[in-house]
Amino acid sequence: MFDALLPLELVQSGEWAEVEEVTGAPGWVGRMAELGVRTGSRVQVLRQGSPCLLRIGTSRFSLRGDAGVQILVRPLPLAD
Image: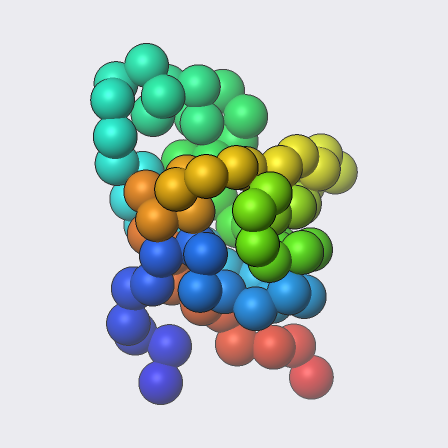
């Protein structure tokens, strides 16, 4: 059920996802990696839209524009 990859912008507020791929210019991909957005990291979407608000570990940050399309994620099932 959770096998499909989605752009980060399609993940609903409150949901968690695992980053599978970050695409774009090498400098931007590197900057995302510095912020913790890299293959294998888990992110929570706190607010959808532009800007979207993300949580990675104990950090929060926002992405604007089409950045959410350049990050492909695998949604994680909700914990019971």
